[in-house]
Image (cartoon, rainbow, N blue to C red; front, top):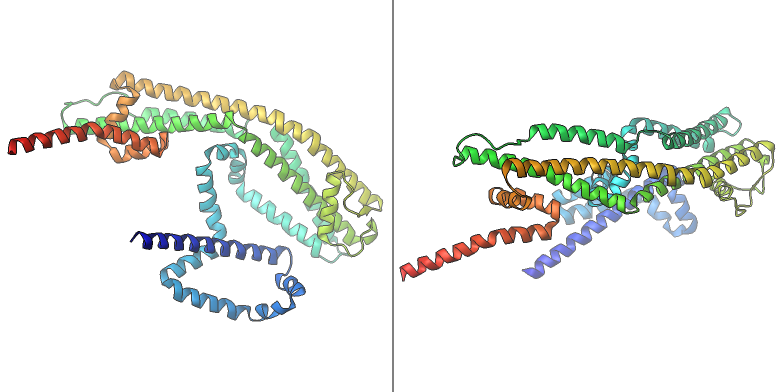
Length: 426
């Protein structure tokens, strides 16, 4: 039986890994086919014998689907097919949130980027699509039309606004953590007004009284558990270097956007007039991306060089941008913004600690229970819910140990009672 279970578990693991690889490979192929190059032509150019795979691709795909359907059955095949087709949504809606839940400290560190993405998702999506269309037109529109110049202007303006937002955020008095601190303070006040701070009225021996008391204690404990978890996670972020991951990622993204934007504009200039650059015979879009990268790094890896005044002016502008990246943005992001975010996190932590201390005082003053006694009472009344809450607060191993320790006296009492009953029977 155990062998069958282990074989089934191994099969499921292999199946899920295979499904994941197929989904990732399919969507990467779609992206490359749409935005980069024709995969069929590229593969056939290197391996002419693979031409039949593309000539009969539809029949091959249908055959694979038919075999998979027979092997997997209706339910699993439909689930697998739906998973692969909707994989981008699975990543956004399920995998990324799950990743952030497992890595709370990293999620808190990247909270500014997450907030900005969610808050202005519609605007960012529209702008991103517009910039992608503009870059595509620069690369594909007729070189003698004004569309190429218009696309270059759009891409350049987008890069300018990106730098403007970076500098504006550096001197803004409000960050996501100040907003979060205010919202959490309001939520804490509302919850403090909602929970019962005093013992219920009525007969302490009645079932209704015990139920009300148990609910009041449980709500209070859930509240303090949330505060405790938030305090631990935020303190972990403050004491670690995880915030630096966000700042470094922000700087890398600005660097990549700069290299891409200038590469598009260089390629546009080349398409308008090939004499704008020297050593640019039989070059393409990616060659100018490389030239843009080399200019940002102030290196001479790329052999392409500006030849006319317009090309030289654009190159000087990019050199100025590299100065902003290396000096100003590094200084601003890794000093000014970093210190401001750290101060906001410290203020948020102080507010959470004050609320946690107040909730503990409520229990001790009004219910005459210490923290350990409160957990014991709640384990007695709501063992399943407390197992979940203790697992969140202390971790699963410690929660199981606490529940086992709590149940020991009861087990001993049951053993004594059973022994006494057996003696009487004898």
